Length: 116
Ligand code: AMP
Image (cartoon, rainbow, N blue to C red):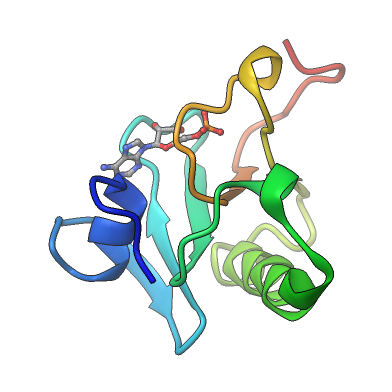
C-alpha cells in the first residue's frame, strides 16, 4: 500500500528521482537531499507506514531490517571504525518532517552530543 502524495512512497516506487544507494524487496535507501553530514542516507520500508509511532508488532521484522541495512550502509561508506549515528525522528519536537518511517544514517564528521 502506498499513501497518495507521500514523497517517500514516490521515491520507493521510482516515481520521483533519488540517489538510491541500496534496495531490496523490503527497503530502499537513498542519500538525503539536504545532507547534514558527508554520509546522510535515509532507509525506508517500501510499504508505507506513518513513522515509528505507528509501528506495531507485525512491523518488527521490517524495522529490524531497516537497522541492519543502515549498519551495512555505514560499513560501505567506510564508517564502521570511525563511528556513525542512526536516528529516527518522531513527532514535531524531534523535527520529523516526512510521515513515512525513515532511518537516518549520519557520519563522516564528528557528531556532537546531545543533539540540538
Ligand atoms: P525528518 O526530519 O526526520 O522527517 O527527515 C526527513 C528528511 O528527508 C530530511 O532530512 C530531508 O532533507 C529529507 N528529504 C526530504 N525530501 C527528500 C527527497 N526528495 N529526497 C531525499 N531526501 C529528502
